[in-house]
Image (cartoon, rainbow, N blue to C red; front, side, top):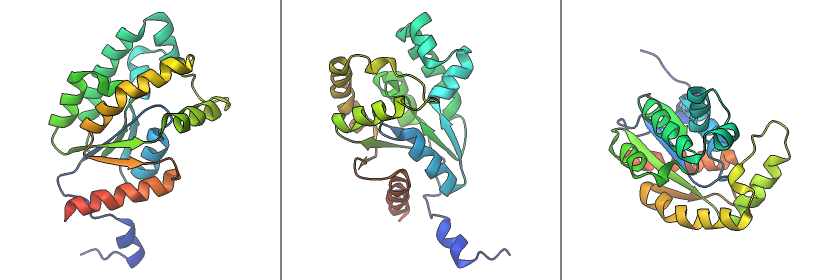
Length: 194
């Protein structure tokens, strides 16, 4: 019988036994990838970014897909990548902001056993500012949907109720760091176990 130290026991959250996938949803800049990595690390799970899987399927970056194949083809690739991602166990998955718009994607997430969706929420100005700051970093991929701020805000307003309906839990992240958000998510998910 293996004995865990007190620190190790505290570090291993008591999640519901049936939970094998955590899906993070929200608009661009919500922190899905950053929080997802922190959460997966804390849980000892795998982290997947749906955009990375799409790029792997297409052999192109997301901006290249937008430019050469168009958004409808991106959404088809996104659905294929989602099927692959949801086949994995003990995974934290960061969705692209538009993935929940497709009814088929929402149904797939809702009907995949052991999967919980969490909405990382923040006001549009906060998200837009985060994206602009991120875009200044040379390794960050461009976000074509932010080229027109008015259209981006309209997309945000369209998607917001979809994110809320899909998620079992919503967490307001505008004043939280990625680590604090991961801690809050673990607390919420641990309460689900009781």
